[in-house]
Length: 60
Image (cartoon, rainbow, N blue to C red; front, top):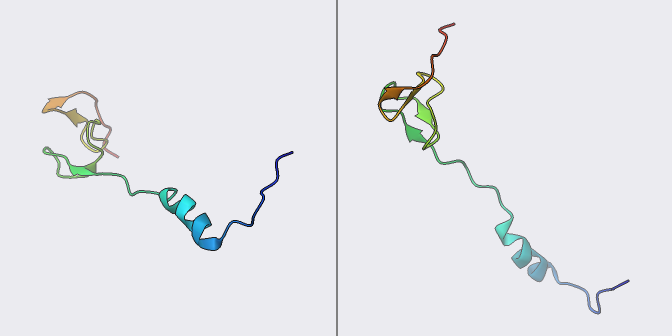
């Protein structure tokens, strides 16, 4: 089995893990109802996509 020849320093370990952080998802405003939604997705609040109603949403 391969074994590391030298100890990896904490700074080197941190440099390797620098790209592992989570990013907050991008959100945009729906032009119909002005709720926040993911870009290129149907609005879950009003059911519109590109100025057309694609999905009917039940009002609770």
